[in-house]
Image (cartoon, rainbow, N blue to C red; front, side, top):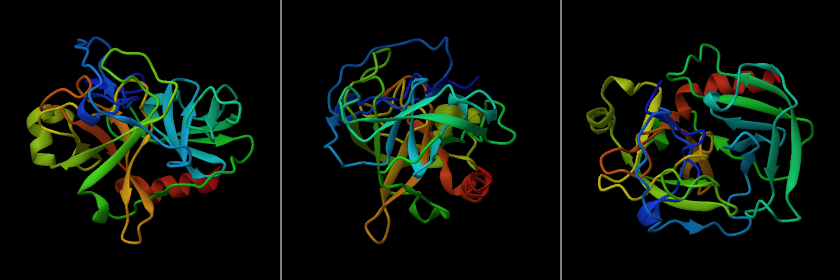
Length: 257
């Protein structure tokens, strides 16, 4: 199993502007708690496409009735009414949140715990919120990205009531491989974070989006919170599913739902 899947790893802001995202990290990975140094609460309506999933993961609205998340957050494909998606408010305890049950799950074909870390969840009814488009080319796989989630705000910490956000810079495949070696799959994954650490996704952020502005100024998703070594550790950037690699497969799969 990879470092530590962020299904219970990447979900909150950590470090200087650290955001804990649900990373895929080995369950036996040591936890070295890092205090919240940065990371800020997202404003209401700032990222309306964000979804919280009841199994402890994040996600984004690919369409108003389909949530894009990580494959490691779900257990196979098929009919599934056990997942609840919460959206519509940065405060999970707000009376205005919308909660919708799942009806089907589609896990990435061929997913075996390494790479291909994406999945789709069909909801029983649409959530009336803006959706997040996905990148279908590598044009936006660089620069500074935004991460957000309700995950832990420190390694080993608890998940959050309020949506947190942070920014992290792109890390090249060559640099990321220096940290993770052969565990990294450059053709399917993209890394982001600061060499000094301090900002990252963490437990509970898994499945949430990493996104940036496109040339028209609209948000576009370039990554899915996947895994990493701890949260916000120096020289261990977060590893995200490279959305552009799977964009065609994701769209085709969504059409079948």
